[in-house]
Length: 407
Ligand code: HEM
Image (cartoon, rainbow, N blue to C red; front, side, top):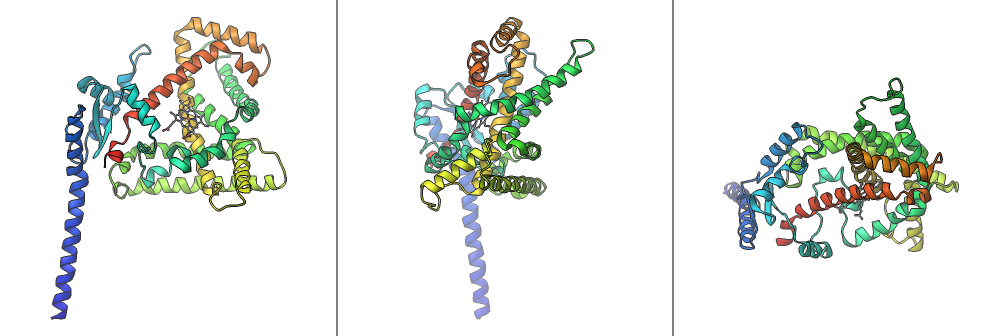
């Protein structure tokens, strides 16, 4: 009798768990998105009807793959190639539209006042939450919020001060010289030729970040870059994990590789930091980003009387250094490549830039003061940074996670 009762209780518990789970699943992936859709439509936003689980994701991937497989002409309008899905949505539904990353609703916001409000209310409009898988690649300052962001930012700030960056210019110059020398050798015979500059520019920016972040240990830094490159590709493929809980269990091979990469990168970073600590104990000056970051962290901890939590942990410092590659490498290589394309198209500006550089620098090595006198160069590089930033900001805004603040 007791055995039968136990059996009934077990089955009942199982059924309750199953029903609860099924209800939660249906609520998260059907009722909640549908409710949001109705709400958004009542607010005047338009978009595709929500489709179970996948939302607009498949269409997004298909359109992106299609656009990337086609070459573009240099004077083409580039937006349909860079963001084909978002471009089509704005064409179809107007600027106030929404779209579905899986079951999550994202809004396209173009009204400047609304954008301002979003930027000011960062406690409400927080950065989209990332899965543990994505956090293996994207971590540090860029995913922090509130007090934690302030703490990290305060400690990192000295690494980006003009005084410190000034000392890094000669390191950047060494990396640039290597590339220019290689290109000169390639066209040595005829004095002209066709060079695929992208791989070299990619290497150049990785080199600059390795040298400026890790100083003399930049070879180890370069290994981190190679690993992170693979990690970026895999993270991009695992984007689903940010939108559907449990997705990571469906791609075990990829997850395993991501974790392997993360372990190897962390091991290199740990060694670098240990050897840096020893050099700092011996009062050696370390003027690279890692050295500045560790020094600033130590000062913060000492200032607060070794309070637990006043500084960054070794793990945090590691994440911030990895972020320098993630945030600084592809952004700058794209900027340099695009600037070169534009200079190739607008030869008059190329000529003016050359004249200015010859006038300001002559045969001297660049330094901060001379760079500040490069008005024309600053003007168009600044313009392309602005263009890059604007598009990045737009992407950040249009992907603002509406679910987060609505629920
Ligand atoms: C053309 C080059 C670059 C562009 C267009 C660019 C763009 C951006 C944008 C739009 C953000 C804000 C991201 C967000 O809040 O979601 C950001 C943040 C950040 N970037 Fe860059 N970036 C560039 C170069 C670099 C470089 C070279 C580094 C460092 C080596 C770097 C380090 C960072 C860091 C640490 C953050 C987080 C800042 C914070 O949250 O306080 N970036 N960048």
